[in-house]
Image (cartoon, rainbow, N blue to C red; front, top):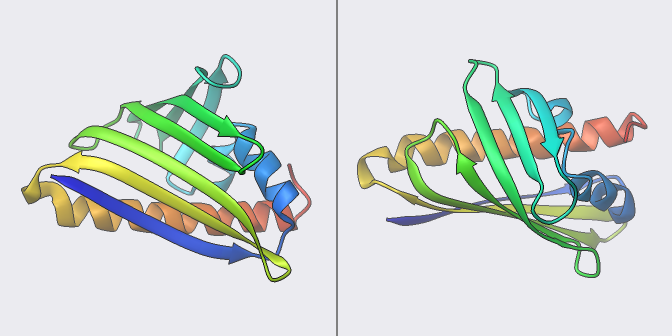
Length: 142
């Protein structure tokens, strides 16, 4: 069954700075508590982002789109420890009354019996990751 998860938050950092961090592809280990290591193989569209989780499992993403004009980033998860058969992530960055709205949406194909636990895990991870990105950028890191 197709499931959508969206977490949208407003950060007190300019959209250009937020977009620069998102579009750089890597660095997720600095924002997401669940990610222990993050490295990137290649550049731009087609690059592969390889992440190790705190439990030692691995996630691989293939970068599908980096749209600077619309500040939209898309990736396909090609390997992960979660019970999904398809996983597409989209991050959209928008100016929002002096701050920046970050909307992170996941579209995934997941079995009904795995749905609730996986939705809760992904919602929590995305929320923590967006908060971590904001803290990272407020501290002056990029």
